[in-house]
Length: 517
Image (tube, rainbow, N blue to C red; front, side, top):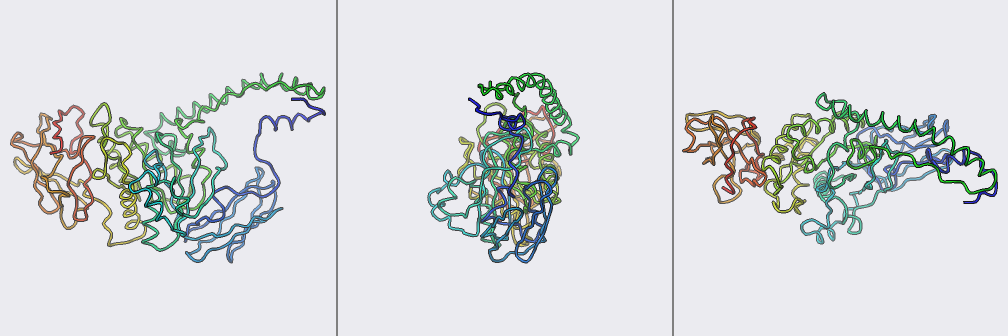
């Protein structure tokens, strides 16, 4: 382009290489906006940007708080907890004034993961009817765009919207059905923040603090640090390339001549939806420290094959999010993957199930089991209503103290060998076990010391099952649902499905898969 007058080099640099956001008016992150739901009964961080040193005042209800923007221009206040109530307004004043309206106090949850969390209401069972019925003005929706970032992003391009037939169709079905059940049960406003991306692994969602929190993830942390160090080295090397261009550009500008294109800077190695931290940086970090009650998670298909290492990654994700949010051990609920006909190993999926079940040992976590609502030829089961409902059962019972809610299906507790039989005891089997259809109990196998599993016959006895086979005289181990196609029929009296398990840790067992028996 032609320059008719001299452009100072610093302005030229900023025009070509934007280093930040324009200064001047007070601004807010997208997640702090009109129609939002703020988390009731918790301290409320409100933040934004202004000129360095500028004083910013926030007025909300009867509260007034003031902060001064730091050298980077960021400011933050923390408001006292507020109970649920009528809609409120908020004003933020610096050199300019921003007025936010229609703000509700209620429950705020984040939903994240890959395609089964991203899967929309319109794609779910009875999607058209669900959309038509979605008239819930006390539910508010916020969808984060699918944009990764090599470094922690400051903001996202999104806004809060009232839940309606016009807004719910493309929203996360699992998160919506979860939130709908909460809103109906608690009778308070619910804010839902969807930040999910199909086909993604867990590593891009983990912040650096998460990798650093687990010794088992040291190799991932070292690789991450290596990439960042390497990128800095590349940038330093590019300074030598940029300096001559600056001289040429400045002379061209002074002479009113065409300024040549600058040399291309290398792409950030983490600016990808496949790179560690890339999605945390672009799609989660801009939400922090917005006060939330908790998070729900549906992911793992893209990490199939990781086995128990997925458990370490889950611990890193949970601890990482809890660290950056600074709210303590907030609830983190997740979905155990559904059966599906993957290629390759038939037990790679059960090994992920095992890792997910192990993650229940992390404080304040919960898991919705989906073995009975799967579509084994479709990796995206359309029944997202029951997935959301089962996550909501965990939240209602464990987060909101609803003591009458049964929230989990039977979970393996212990085994005892009784001559040629094995007695398996379950947790979450109060009132006894049940069968969800008219068939014999399915997907149990039993093995002796030879590690050869064979189909077993099973009988229910209270909160236990007795497992045996004429082919195994001295049993050593039992497996339940240990196949990617397993859709077992064992439940508790509330109809919630039992969690697949194995009592052994063998990697060289000889499985005999019982089909649907």
